[in-house]
Length: 190
Image (cartoon, rainbow, N blue to C red; front, side):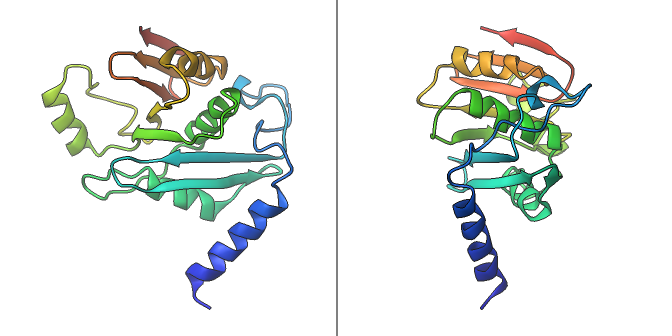
């Protein structure tokens, strides 16, 4: 049995074991815990799809207070700069915001990820094409994601992101996506 087959079987068994459990609510409530993690739950799950690469990830990445390294590695690879193939460790807070906001939207549709990590080179190229791309973007730091859902509006997604109190939330209604990051609390756009 190959390493890949062993991994798939383990993940499949793990997902089956938790199928009847609420898929995410985040972490047990502790004093000082960020708002997006309050609400308790013993597992966290992220479900994303990329139209750019055709790939998807649907994985439990946190169980009973511990992040699962293999799942985080899978998320890091999925959220890579697909233009260059470069991978960066995505800030765990960002993954938590994605999972928590998705849970608040109460949908089984995976988030469509438009942009995750961007290398400095890719960010500079995008910045040369649009004044809406920040020079010191949180995408470069592995701390931001641009997301879309066909079953939810930009307003609904932005409200879910803001409710997490985990960072910045930008509305891009004309382009039909929401930017979420784990930087300072702030909002922008319409």
